[in-house]
Image 1 (cartoon, rainbow, N blue to C red):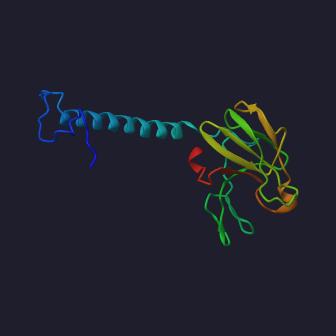
Image 2 (image 1 turned 90 degrees about the horizontal axis):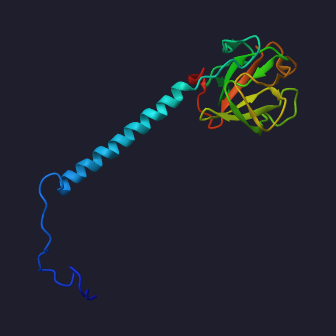
Length: 189
């Protein structure tokens, strides 16, 4: 058995000589204060995170669509809302109406993270860009970016919409907005 010299463990029956404090400095009071402080920080964190989400809204993405009108449903190609059926899978983005060849704009101040290819098959619309800003990370598909690095201010030109009609004749041409974590982007519009 280990022996403890000059410590409170060496004499287990000996009482401590410190005086017990009463009033606001008791251990129960300190525990309550710690819980109050912890709860305060937790509440502040929750409120702060919800304020960030509420403040970030996409500005106009495409020339000719200043209200960011969402793509509805096409008989042949399905609907443009997040979670819409694509046969055995779900649509993981939100489609914003845009005319082939139209200018695509930065929806707020963003950092360009690089190219984002939706298909990887090099067809006429297999291009896009990955961006971050406002606490968000997102990709815009079917866009030919003017550059692949740097930063852009709100309303700066990102590039041009590629010719969707060449690949999907009769579809409502659009920019596909997809969050990097594949969550629903609808609340940002």
